[in-house]
Length: 257
Ligand code: BTN
Image 1: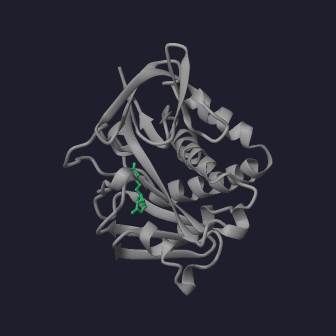
Image 2: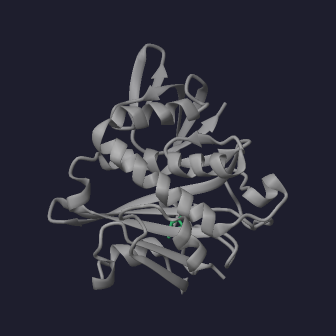
């Protein structure tokens, strides 16, 4: 059972997680926050679920996570709060927050994979799914959904990347309350930085992405492209170099060659 008191003591934010909703079971924390219900209007609202019945992953995949062992949560940002922020950059701030939290608390080296996976030793420990609700042509709210494997040690199903968890890497149980508070504390700091100096966030992300400069493949539906991972651009799109041309990639799964 998640201990709200311990979490609250560790939380040092001004607004992220100050409206905190704890659920036992829910379809998806992202879906719930996107619904725009009255209790979820406050900027920085966080919903944590012990179990998602239909957890969503990138590219219409599902996110499976054993009940009560991991962290599956979503953060709401309202449109007023992100006027200065490029929403693509939120992927980088969120994955950096997760990676820094793991490194700060457990001294495990993490790596980031475009656009927003967190890896340990090439295995996936966390995934992020950012979804928006649109009114007319304008973004109404942004929901940042984060799934991290903490204490699960067996994974069923098929994965493009081998999953891992902090417990598998460390050999000991991990405190969920501490980890969630650390991520939210860091995410709020990185959000401020995104508003002031987004270039710093992109540079920090680049320094943790070990695939830049490598030969890669990009798969999107059944199309596969290959080339050199040249860089990310100022919007966070991947730049793929082939011969002397550079192609901008908006979506896709990156693979190593
Ligand atoms: C991915 O790597 O495919 C992204 C996974 C994102 C999973 C999280 S768990 C909390 C939030 N609610 C969801 O339904 N999905 C995200």
